[in-house]
Length: 85
Image 1 (cartoon, rainbow, N blue to C red):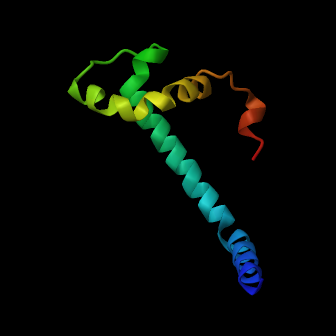
Image 2: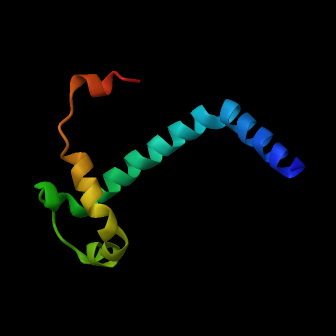
C-alpha cells in the first residue's frame, strides 16, 4: 500500500515537471520517423526515387508501419489543425 502511494506521488511529480518536455521529444521522434519512412517508401504515395539494397534490408521492420503512415501523410489537413496548439 505504501509502495503504491509512492508510485502515485512519483507519477504525479513526473507529470507536473516532465510532461511538456517528454511530449516535445515524442513529437520530434515521430516527425523524424515519418521523414525516414518517407525516404524509404515515398513511392507508395507518389514521390519517385531510386530503389536500392537498403530498402530491402529495412522493409521487414517498416512493413507494419506503412499503412498507418500512409493514412497519416495523405490525410487532408486544415488550417485549424495547425493552430490547435
